[in-house]
Image (cartoon, rainbow, N blue to C red; front, side, top):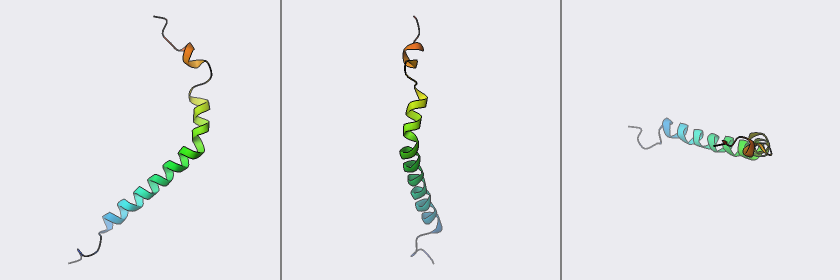
Length: 52
């Protein structure tokens, strides 16, 4: 029996979690400023409101 060692799935899950956190931090820290300036341009929020 090899139940005394963590299975390959546990290592895969841990590696995926670390990669996901690293990728999220990388994108959040590097692209947040660019997304803030491109998603909502100045004055666009008032222009897109419904006239009703």
